[in-house]
Image 1 (cartoon, rainbow, N blue to C red):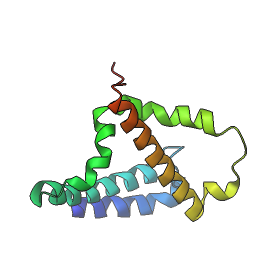
Image 2 (image 1 turned 180 degrees about the vertical axis):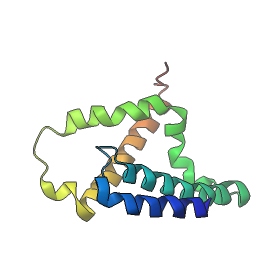
Image 3 (image 1 turned 120 degrees about the vertical axis):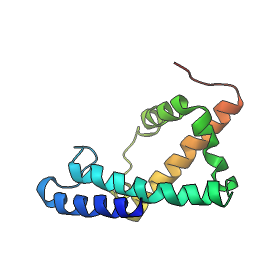
Length: 124
């Protein structure tokens, strides 16, 4: 699996000059990099959780697994509520952009956990 990850990473690297790397435009290099990351992380998480038995570290992700539709919809609601004013370009890139994304993800997970505990579960 790690060799597969390396293959997709190299393929993405060589395709990047052709179409760039863009999630928004769904470029092939972005897709290949995403596959490479998944192929790298899957065996690592499998080894950690299934082989070694360390699973408590992932408890904060359980609300997203129990109530995935709500967790999927919440960011759109938050963006509608919290992006009333101008945040600034500094928070959209670099280290501040990464910190903002991490905090936003944690806020979404926390809200999903709270709503799931209150028995608000979305189903199709």
